Every structure is written in structure tokens, then in C-alpha cells.
Image 1 (cartoon, rainbow, N blue to C red):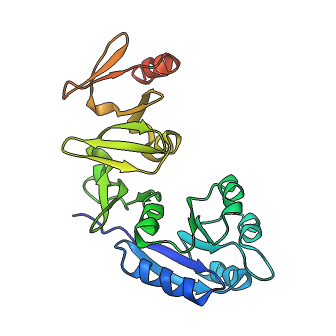
Image 2: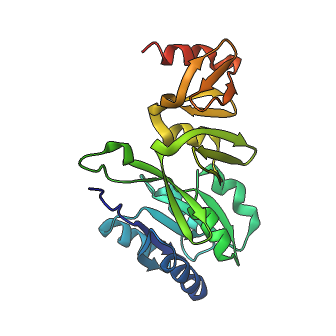
Length: 234
């Protein structure tokens, strides 16, 4: 028996009615997302967050009284946040606050999906099979596809993206390798600055490579060699 994962609860904080309309439509047509509420300013957002749990915040920057950035800085435990703004100059400060993404208005549904796909999701543990416990959300044409961690063989860094390789298919995600190490957890080991491997798929450790069960050969980076050997001595 598999437990259906809870939808990602989204909150829109923006003083523009058009932004509310667009984001409400995009959230409504995206599987796995649900709208928790819509706020016109930071004051309304404070009240909403005090009463309702939120997983993902779509936050405008230029708002009256309290800007979106100041609002975000004031939160002790902020939800994952996507900034939405018409101004490019705030991008650096937004990323300094560790936001998921920065959507420049007007943005398309495809660009919206790219931002949402950066959000790792965790499925509640099924009673009988904890291997399905965690998964990644991958953007597909029809919506967001769940790729269970147990299906991942290795991850390869590709500039601003990572390539997730399973036994049957590969997917591109807009994540960093550092983020993937944190998301995937201890069942995966980093063998090189460009490769993270599922430990269960490693067949043999060689002096300069790891050999996987499907005969894929991946390099071992010098800076990761010691940690890799210690990992398998646990």
C-alpha cells in the first residue's frame, strides 16, 4: 500500500491582481500543487502564515509598506520561496536569501514549471516499503513526474543543471550538485565533483574509478577519494 503524498501548499503574496490571477491559474493546473491562500501585502501574509502551514511562497518584491525582501528576511523559518518581480536588479539579493528561483514578470507557464521543479519533495513513508519514501519532482510536458530516489543510479553535474540517470531514462533538473547531496541523503555518495552515485549501484571500487552494476565506469576525484573509502568502511 502506497500513501499518496500531500500536495505542496502554495501562498501568493503580491499587490497586483493580475499576478494573483496568473499564479492562481498556474498553480491550479499543476499536479502536486494546491493554493493555500492569496495575500496583497506582507501584513496579510504574516497573518496567513500564523494560521496556515505553507510549503512554497510566491513572493513579489515591490510591495507597499514592507517589501518582499524585508518580509522574507523577517521570517524565522521561511517556506521555500520563489521571487516574482518586474525588476532584474533584485536577483542577486534574492539568491543571497537562498530563494528557489527568481521569476521575472511576465513569465510563462513553462518558466513557472522550471521554478517549481527546483522544489524537492518528500513522500510520507509507506507502511510496507520505505524505499519509496523519497522522490524528486521532474518537469515533463504533461506535468511533474515523481522519480523515486531508489530508481536513481547516479547524478552528473552539467553546468547550471544536473542530469539524473535511472536504469531506463535520464532527466535534467535545475539544481546544483551541493543541493543534490543534501536532498538525496546518505544512500548516495559523491565520488567526483561531477558525480554522485547510489551506493547500492556500486559494484567495485578501483584505484581511479567506480564500476557500477550496469558496467558504467565513473571517475573518482582526488578530493573525494578518502571520503569514499571511509564511506564503505562504515
